[in-house]
Length: 365
Image 1 (cartoon, helix red, strand yellow):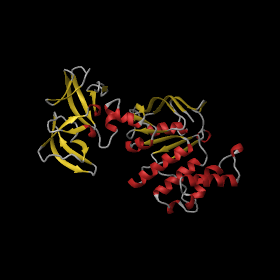
Image 2: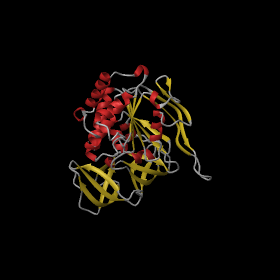
Image 3: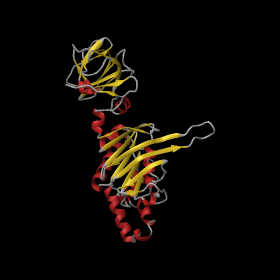
Image 4: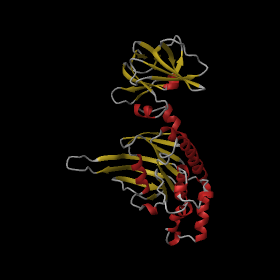
């Protein structure tokens, strides 16, 4: 099911006499392709959950339209949209068994959609098998682990055979190992069912690992939409560059003179086509090359061995972060000196305007 959002806006009224309106989502237009998994990514308060709730019908847009295929569903009630919604807190009925929880949405179907008991049971076991909990059908939620409860919630959303599956931070309450396992399961289920899926998260690693497309949001405004690797490799502004990446991007003050980039007094690389100006420099951790004769010299703080890689922690007077963190291959040996020098990989270095933090592009040779 293709989902089209046209100039979608949500404004919450101010509370009290002096408080202002809050624009939670501002003029969001996007077409979600049929059968894809799209991640809505951003910090708390960026509007991603509000967007999800408008798509589900739980909240009404202040302006704009929502189309499922060719059907305008903007004013349609949630139960008539054909969506399956999974919350981060599972929202299971504690007094019901797993089977009863999964059956519940089917028991509320009326009219032409009403199913026989046999059909409902077949659907329930198909959904349970898909999320691999078919052996737990007689248990109560309190007898399940967090990961198993989340699978029940997903099965309950899938049992109605929805046109669209909406996941609101479904992994937030799981520990690290379960998060990894469950996100892999979500991706497997989405591929097997082919259901158009929207996955809301503030965790960029989650979004990048399972999404076909990611939508990066800030204060209700879409910053960038693209495939995960494309957003990481080609951020449109400083916010996107800083939000994606673990460890995060290194940010330093710099200047361009004569098409050369200077950090401090050192000319660290050529930036063809860029006019003379002060800039903000973003360098991905993997963009450093250990080089005794390299133009960028930092004060060495610590070396962290991570197995196949080494994380070198250093400082630089022009860094806007407390430290400069570089990731280099473990085959390299970091010298036991007070300073460490690097050359840079041009395709891992980004320039941004000091005025509005937009991207300044240069030709990478």
